[in-house]
Image 1 (cartoon, helix red, strand yellow):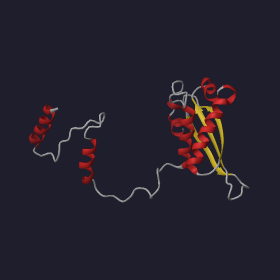
Image 2 (cartoon, one colour):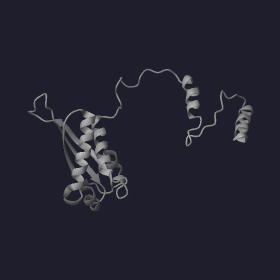
Image 3 (cartoon, one colour):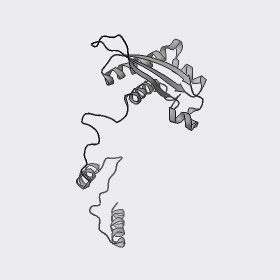
Image 4 (cartoon, one colour):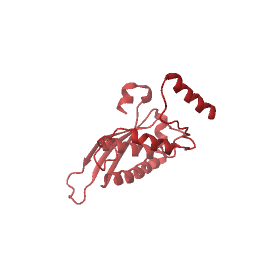
Amino acid sequence: LAEQLIAIDQLAIELGFEWAEIVPVSAVAGDQVSLLADLIAPLLPISPPLYPEGDLTDEPEQVMVAELIREAALEGVRDELPHSIAVVVEEMIPREGRPADKPLLDIHANVYIERPSQKGIIIGPKGARLKDVGTKSRKQIEALLGTPVFLDLHVKVAKDWQRDPKQLRKL
């Protein structure tokens, strides 16, 4: 380490400038990462907030809902379908005719896989796995949105969607 620090210092001399600080860090071990952050932070320009107070993300709710469904669908099948699952929320609409104090949000989503053989893995015996995906993701979606949800899931095959640029953009 000492040799590397000397070489870095020598480089600055050869190029005709001086380092403000030389801080050896290890991101893996976490060595001196806090020190580096403390040294860099005062040098950064002050900027107005990029998002309104309280916003956690700039992603639309539909994207977040799709990710919650995808996460639930991958649970337990990561080895079999590591990246072959995509979820698209087709619509999120408040149920008509519901009282204002008892709203219900209807969410219709498609779970896409690449091959027909994967359909059985996602659906499971007698639909048990898909039902479990729906139950788990619905609870997380309700917590995220703060309203009761009716979740309608369908499994569809989009042949080799990861290799098709048009489908990849869509999914």
